[in-house]
Length: 278
Image (cartoon, rainbow, N blue to C red; front, side, top):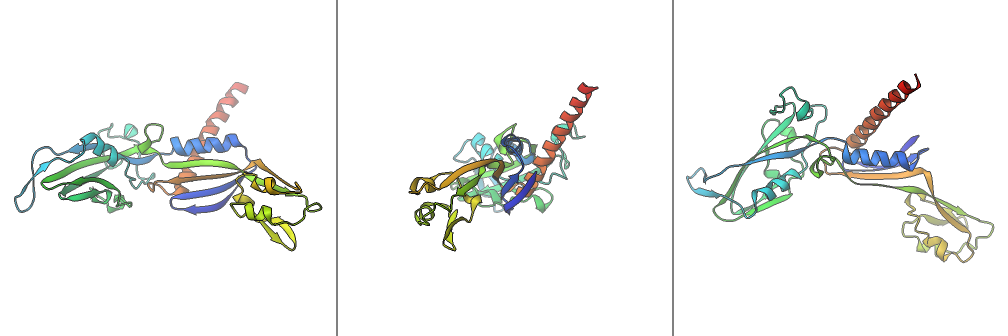
């Protein structure tokens, strides 16, 4: 198996996986979506009663939205995740009570009139856990309205809830295999012009495949080819795989963790098969 990187940014990855099959790539897709852990806010405590500012003005502890809706919105805010620093709360030595090894605490204290954004979440402790995507709107407070919130983030996986989903938009497609019979080609430009992805080009008086990785197997080129010399098919042993992240983890971190999880599972399977053969 070989992996070539077409694009790798902090929040997006596109790869060409060769010498593989759709079953393995789909297993990788399901793993990064459902089983790669990340931090997300799981518990939100709302202050009840009046909130006083420094000048002694009293604000009503209320917002236009129900607390449950606010908590849900906060749970979907991408929280920076360091997988080497945290363990699952259920496996922590604190017995699930919550400690710096398994949780991150945030506070939010805003008084209206204003719009509350994700960047208003203040990490209690290290600044490295400050939310990077700080312009996600949470709620708009009117005059005399205020919010005082304490939120707790912990590790989880997408199989538990979508707020812990490390990868989004994960999908794959076969690598395009375009064959051109040059002995019968009239070197017309219709196939080049109709391609929406710039796969074909004219070079040295021939139609050539310039960017096979861009082919989506739409067959637009074969439909306009009067001589019928173009054949398009997908290669099931060479697959283009892409996904994005919400920024909690980088695309590289998600990919590496997903591959490690698969490796561990295959090793367990190998050991179980070995026991059956004894």
